Length: 128
Image 1: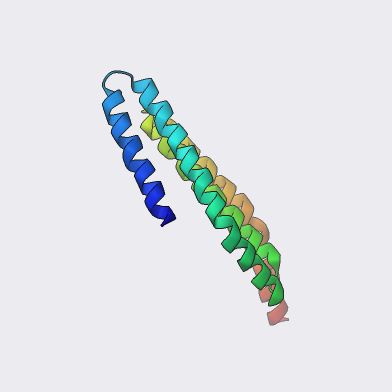
Image 2: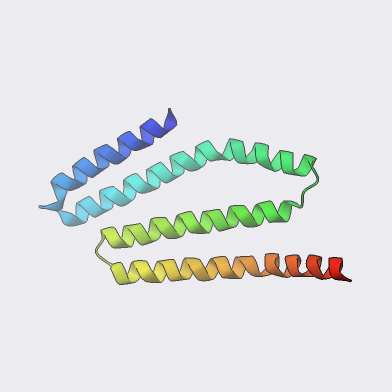
């Protein structure tokens, strides 16, 4: 039922921001960012245990852990990029949000290069 807590925080924050938006727009934005960070930290705390279990299973089965770590980094980049872009849009900065998304896409590309090289080397090893 952890998701209900997060949804309640979203609903309450949206209501407070709606009230403040007409009078104190900057406070509405700060409250929105604060609540978003709070929810993000809360969710990360709940994800750590399942990720640890998954990592242990990957090690037991002898799967290369670097693929798992790369996938986690990619997931983190995606979430942080989305969070940043949404916050920029909430502040009325659509152009800045687009640049944040571009930075995230470039980071994912850079992260994927070693993985692509590894896949190519494996494929070439099968061909030879």
